[in-house]
Image 1 (tube, each protein chain N blue to C red):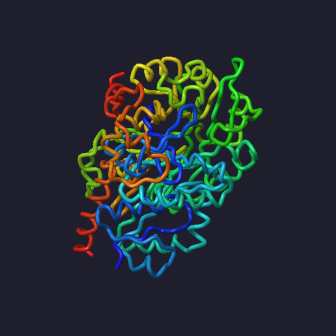
Image 2 (cartoon, rainbow over the protein chains, first blue to last red; image 1 turned 120 degrees about the vertical axis):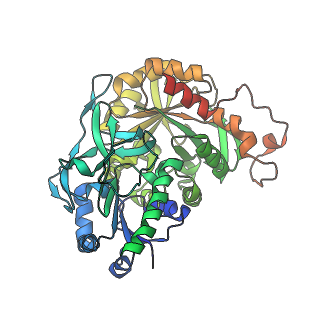
Image 3 (cartoon, helix red, strand yellow; image 1 turned 90 degrees about the vertical axis):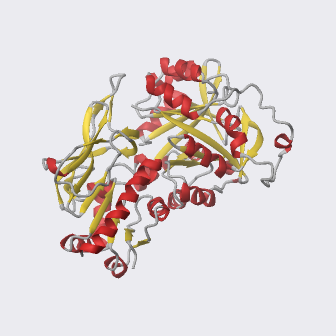
Length: 218
Length: 273
């Protein structure tokens, strides 16, 4: 049995995610085979690219059903970058598109003022994550990572009224945005832990601990 | 924003090479080992550039990218000779996060649209190799070998309009010299660019970085020679087997006028300001 199935819908840098999982000793497989996915302990929804196309492919491959099934069984679901955004209700990227709706909130484009007066929406580079201390967060994926820098590459960000799921925030120019979320068995990262050096790898190490804990509870 | 410090590794036939003004490529060692050193030293991103790919019409880096991904957890920007969407896919699949294009974009600007449509703006960086001529900056292709009629500012506008997520600008005049990036060019970029940009060519000291940031606001600074020569003792071992012209490596090392430039020193300096 694989610890983690990395959902292969031909978008994003799946190989790097697998390398990071390998590095910390989590057995994973990049796959679109529903049976293999079902038999995994956890799933990673990766993703780079446009929201509507990603949702279309997720539905074509019937990944949505299996994600809901995982959620009902309270198995770990991990969303990275676009993969995290897909967990929310809807996005305004290109056109209004319904997401998986496991978390409440929508996805909007940045439009922030630069030093030279022009506006920008593209956040590429390293930003600090500022942890929100919340009592109801049971997993400590971001343990000891307060104010550490992670690698971001995105133009859209999460808007959510569900403040309790927001585990860390970051800044793009003056805009404070949601950089990670967690709710029960679901977690999401707007940045790429697998591209964020030794600090990013710590998140995968924490994930490994939680996978082991999960085994004992289910 | 935090300015990224990006080691740029030029690759020819599996070797790390470096020239001056994009010419006279000298073999410096195994690129993967240098990348590993830069990762440990705190680099923000790695650039791999197959510098002969454009000439031979093929990019040769997928196995290097794969090997690198296994234990170097940094964003990787890869380019050189890419001319269609399938090649982009192969490179991304190997573990690269983004790709850059120069020659193919100049020959057929529509390829920018195609790549943006398929992979999104954030995956595409357009590379410009510019040379100063009568106070104008003119773009070149094929790693600086071929002249074109593209003028810097008008080409930037077109590339932005077509959806490039970021632009990397190499000053051929300062590349490999260690004399600092061309500040006239830097100022021009700051005035004319809307998308984030990386500057490349000539940086070899912290003072030069300060001078650059006084007149420009790049999102990243790519550095080649100054880092390679600073870290060569750590990254190259005499027993490494290499093909190509390695006479330089066999000789007693005399690395021209480059001082020691450490990634950690640059980053600490930038943090203070």
